[in-house]
Length: 118
Image (tube, rainbow, N blue to C red; front, side):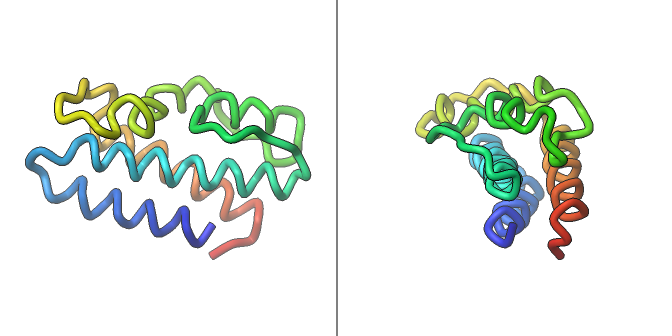
């Protein structure tokens, strides 16, 4: 969770900077959510593959005490920021920074409450 919060903080800084930073902001938003999901999977003793696919990671939590309180599909637009847009200057804005912030906050806050993490 500590590393996820760091990515959440970096996302916030980059998103506020404006300019040509959308891909970088999206990358850190995606990374924050990915780290949270993997922490929840570890807490659930559930195996998971090496992947950046947030939706598939969230679906592995279904039926566990750590299942997200919203559809895993909501996370799908963040995944390309870790893979497809990582090394690309031309980025299709799949989400606004505000939408990214909302998703990251929802996932981090949920996990913090479930795991008792600050």
